[in-house]
Length: 177
Image (cartoon, rainbow, N blue to C red; front, side, top):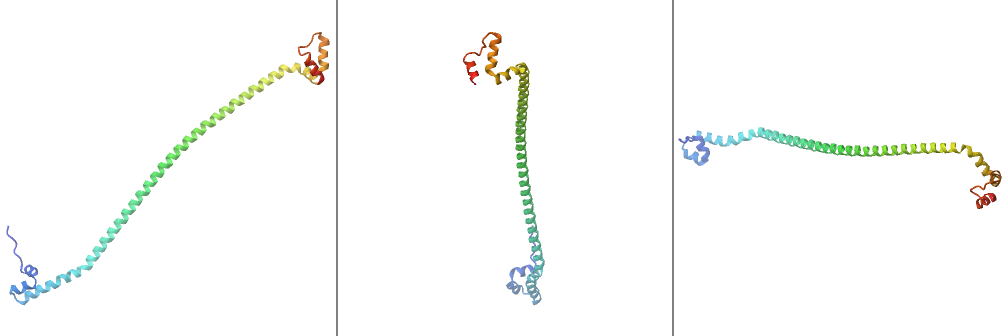
């Protein structure tokens, strides 16, 4: 491949003022080269406001992107905290439900115990009532013994001719009271 020929302007630009003098061309070309050297930076300076605006837009876009990234990260962090809180509350709810089941079982056991005690009380009242009915014929004798113990015992011995099984010291003790 053959190298491309270097144009006069490129050669002038590469060589600077010495290249312009050596070219031996008239002042018109040298003036054009000089103008190019002066105008190119001026054109670059003229393009500078657009570049500044582009840079500013780029910085704004980067800032906006960073803000959006930070907002997404914050939202993800909030979502993670909310998920952790939801999980913690679910565990607490499960533990509370377990405690509730234990309390309900204990309440049921106490209720069963109350029912058993109530049944025992009803049974005891029934037995007491049955004994009271069995002792009904003895009430007059019990009343007489409590009011007149000595006379009742003496009357028993006199009528039956036998000594009651609770005679002796018991009779004397009862008579003195």
